[in-house]
Image (tube, rainbow, N blue to C red; front, side, top):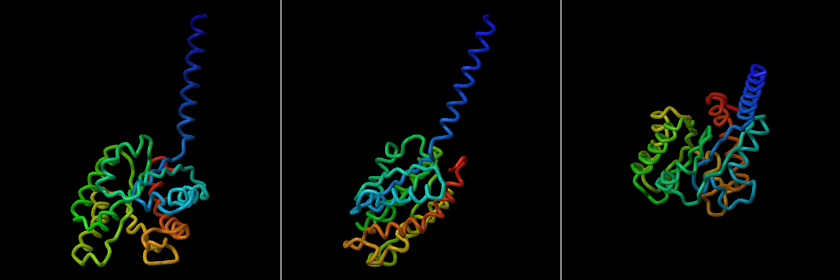
Length: 214
């Protein structure tokens, strides 16, 4: 009888383990969009922001993903660094890191966003979380020297940490009044559509590079 009980207990344990593994596999691929107002969806209605539309686009292509919005309007790279650890929960598989625009708009020395982004990438790498670095470009009115130093931050850090790079988060939208809000800085709902369409192949490639990607 004792032997039969051992067999039964072993079978129950085996089934429980199989259930846990199956449950883990059923979890969606978790992505965090970590950034400023461009990520947060400033001035847009429910479902119109970047993370919502990216999630919808990925799911439409058959990918089981959950894209969390960790954007904070007005955030600088210093603010992002301060909240990184608690804003990116355990279990996150990919972070779309989009910060730096507010540093640039305030004329902050490029060395500061470079150092902050460097530290963020180092922390995420230590946690074994993949990153897609979304680049930003400096406004021409800040001068050629500033523009050169700032624009170089993103490709150089992407190379240093061997992470995916999307060179310009506002590609196709910046300077296009029909795709921006009246402030001329933030994308409209139509602008977000363009952003998602353009970045989607890069996001899919980044997902595919993660072991067990969706």
